[in-house]
Image 1: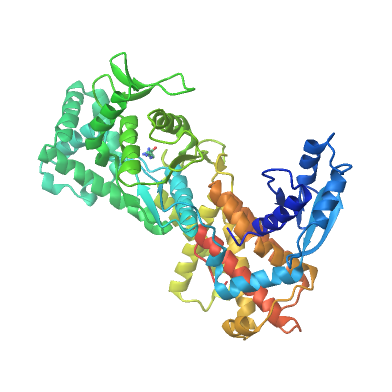
Image 2 (image 1 turned 60 degrees about the horizontal axis):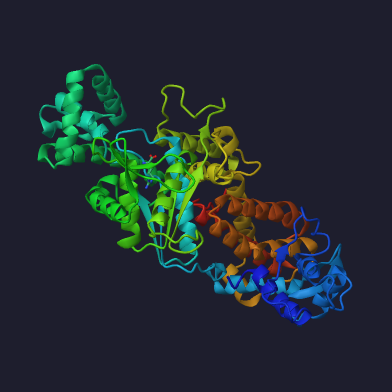
Length: 590
Ligand code: ARG
């Protein structure tokens, strides 16, 4: 990532370290941004921390150094001349603090304005990646857990795309296969003796159908038998059963699509059923490699460090969730030639994926080193909780319809918008669009900003507040920046062509510095697949802009107007890139 300040500094320090300790092999520059935590911000922007490590190696040897500080001083003295650095100082036991040149910072921001923010994108060393996300189950509930998977997965796919991966496949691995279809189909036949009558409106609610058929299944042994036979008929390709199955899937799909459409999420469906024909072959290959064992009539695979085996074929000869994932991973590696496959599900499935990947390593189908491509990563997330601290449910039923949830967020935003006096001359269409942007954006952001491993409490009042770390606050901050630029009456494209950024005020410098942090923060967020890192960055950017820069530096009508307008524009561009990566639609006025 050539745009990363950290990497550029590391290159300069590498030259110095080579000169300071020419006999040391593979010295790696330890350069990091100073944070309030390391107590560094007072002394510099970045720190080089090599001196202590070098001293521990040289201690007792004839080196001419008297301790870490003298090594630190030598590192400073040996730095090649660079436009990046304004000054260096020594602190504590040998830390080298670096103050960046404000002109260099200004030029960096300026270059982004002229060349575009895509020049700040890192380049991952792979061409083909996949995010397996959302993946609800047909006819069962699409619950808030699937909503989390949808939101997080979409962002991860966007992050990989921004990292110049040529092909990022967004895969919806829907649960469209399994024993539940037997009872569903049998029940459907009972309810609609004439199959032509089956339609979305006739069935109404698939979940209700699921519940009713489950009741029949549990209560009536005769029905249960028929349902079990139905599974066999379906799996052997009986046309009447196949058709019923397709009808059920189509109705579910239409329901899922409503959620995806509201969220603006693209997915490519390739459900469990697709892999069914591949299962026997894959298990046979694993068997030939000596991985498959007989246990209690089932065919199982043991993997390192887990004392329960992975069940590849059930006792009755049937396949399960594991069988399908063995086949789908095989397919993804061999047919789709994917180099990085990311699975997004709740943390409860961690062991499932751990065992799956380990089985593939045992077979030699994935490299033993987890950091070498092709690689697989499971991204687990915590539960969604209600205000009562229990699993999130709505008052009326035990499941929350996701569509209702999103509509509710939008409705609340619309009410809040209509209460503002600035909106009186907005068209109905504008109000609709902006309440959607804010409402859906708020739901997404509330989810993405927390570390994904922790449980999260779903609370409309909190996520829709215009104060604090919320999408509403951020969208308003962005809209305010746009309105400052509009108020200046200047054509910002003209200003970009002819104007220069100057960072004389400390808050201008602070803003410029934070803008320049984007490339390395994004790189960290992407390599650890942590959208929350990007959210923290975005929130801090909005805070620095609003509470520091805009409070203390007059923009419109000041002698520094040109430079400050450019800083406003650069901030808006970086914010919009963050919004885009987080799947949030920006708002330009409020
Ligand atoms: N359908 C599963 C669920 O609802 C998630 C599937 C995740 N993807 C996979 N390849 N197993 O929990």
